[in-house]
Each structure stands twice: as C-alpha cells, then as structure tokens.
Amino acid sequence: MDDRSRTRLMASPRIWLFADVLGGFGGIETYLDALARRAYADGLDVRVAVARNGPAPFLDELKSIGIPVYDQKPVLGDRFFIRHRLLIHYVTKSLRPGDWVFCVRQPMPELYLPLVRAVHRRRGRIAASWMFSPEYLPPPPGPVGEDFRRAVAETDLVVSVSECGREQFLKVYGYEGPVAVIRYHNREFLADALPLPDGPPWNFAFLGRVEIEQKNLDTILDAFASVNRRRPDTRFNIYGGGPDIERLKAQADALGIGDAVTLYGRYDHRSDLPRILAANHVFLYASNFEGGPCFSLIELLQAGRFVIASPVGGIPDIYVDRPEAGTLVAPDREAPIAEAMAVALARLEAETIEPAAIRRVYIENFHGEIAHAQWCEALDLNQRPVE
Image 1 (cartoon, helix red, strand yellow):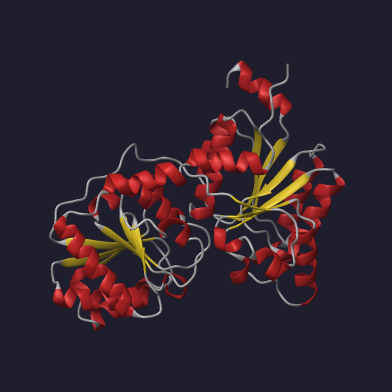
Image 2: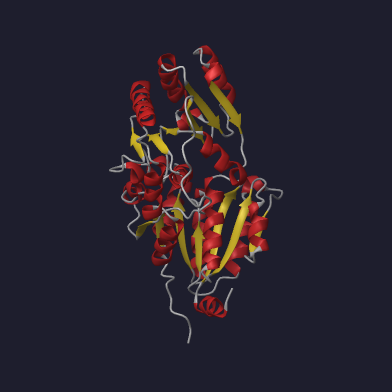
C-alpha cells in the first residue's frame, strides 16, 4: 500500500464486512473475497468478521495480504446463537462514529435487531445486502418476524443485487429507507473470452448447486432428453455438489440418456473453472428462483459463454435486450427449454455465437470495477485524501 493509500485510509471510516453464516466457497464467499480484496486495494480500512460453519481457506488468504479477519468458530450453545452474539460483541465494541458494518448476506432474523441497535449505540452505520429478493425471504411469523421488520426499518442502507428486488423491500418488509442496486463484486479470473471447443459433440452444461427445488434440474434434464433423442451428438455435463445428484442420475437412466449425461460432483471453484468453461458450448440456468445476477452467470459472461436462463430474480438484468449473451425461457415446462436448446444448436453450427461479444456485456455492465464504484458511492466512501 503506497503513502497516498495510507493517507486515504486515515480519512475513511472503518468498514466491517460481516457474515453471520459462512462456509465453503460458494456465491457469498466469492462475493466477500472479491469485495474485501478490492476495498483493501483501494486503501480502505476494511476488516472481515464472520461466523464460520465450515472450511473457508480463502480467509487465510485474506489474512496473508494484510486484511484483519475475525473468524468466530462454533462454540457450545450454538443453538442459542452464542457464537453469533460473541461475533456481534467483538465487532461493535471497536466501532467508531461513522464506521460501517456491511452485511454481505441478508442477516439472520433472530439476530438482526440486536446487531442494528448495537451498531447504532456506537454511532456506527449498518448496511445489508440481500442475496435473494424479499419475496423469497419473508419475515418469519411471530415476535421474531416483528423484530426483524424493526431491524430492517432501522437499517441505514439496504442493498439489492437486482433491479427486481428494489421495490420489494417496501412491500415485504415495510422498509422506507434508501435502497441501492449494487452489482456483485467479482474477481476477473480470465483475461479474455474462451474460444468455443470444437463440436460435435455439442456440450450443454450446468454449473452450481445440484438442487432440484431451486435450480429446476429435473425439468432441464427432461428438456435435454427430448433434444438428445433427435440429436444424439449432444451431451449434458453437470458440475457441482448438492443433495440431488443421485436423484438426477436415476432420472437420466430412466429417460434412457444415462450415457449422454455426466454428473462430475464438486469442483474447486478457484482452479477448475477455466477448464470447465472451456470444455462446454452452452450453459443451462433455467432456475425456479434466484437472487441477483448469479455469480455463475457473471463468470459465464467473463468466459463468453451463451446461456439459456429463466426470467427470475436478477437474471433478466443480464439478458434482457442482449440476445448475443443468452435467451430467457419459462422454467415450468420442458418444451420452451428444449426449443431454446435447439435454437442454440443451430447457432453453434452456423457459428453465430460469439464469445467476444458476450464478454463485452461483462466488461461494460458487470465488471468488478463497476460494482466497486457503485458500492463506494452508496456507502459515501469517495472521500478526498487528508491534506
């Protein structure tokens, strides 16, 4: 960090990146990692405080570059949220007037009111980012839900990661304060778009959590089966862990397409992603529900990969009026998904899918620098250096 950055740090508020649930290296962990690195590189006094549920080696990497990390591990009494209360106490006791606590995911309803009020007692400010729109995260019933609404009402800044969620905070929570739409921070892991692999075979793929309820993989598999019967030169590759791997294997066998479907299981996000993206032509993301423009979709934009997706959550923020990058289909029936796959196959054979054009959508709209500028503006962090 140079002298100018140190001077800026002195002029800036301290910012705690806070997560009351953290584990592994999924979307929220990817977000936290990218946000912490970018804020630190910008000379901001950024710190991380998390309650960790599982292995999170990226936290050690953040420590190694100089970012202070408080990692609250499980303790006896977890069912009474003891460790989360310890986490809140640790963060708030060190707050100075004007400091921020930025929740990188929507807070737990049982703990949010104590957190908000502890921050405000120290004359700090609190912001929270929702990974799903409020319609998918209604307040729980009873006193917990009432306290959660109070906490949201007292929040200094609510962050929505999609345009569709902007109005829902008022409708679902009764929140009348400021709502900022801020894209996810993300790290640029590719310097350029990846060329499409040779075909046939033509490889469709899914990348993410293998869960039917949210990701709609059973309907997607039915759609692929109807395509594969007409086009045996197609394959469907599924990457990721989750509760429904065996169920999907059984479904593929029952459909008679077991030889054309491969479930690879878990992958190392930080090392395997370029190889996975380079091996496949078109990705399927016809989810039943989502939050913001998903990390997987942002990564696919980086790589220049065409996507067949559903118009839920923040997904339309990416693909509406951008036919070069993907197409939107209704997720509730296999026919529209299968038809979109057939159209994509025709485009692959005609060589009219252009990875470079898809990557331009990322560069111009979803690049990490764009997200960081939005975040700094929303938190009023664009301060002048001290003279």
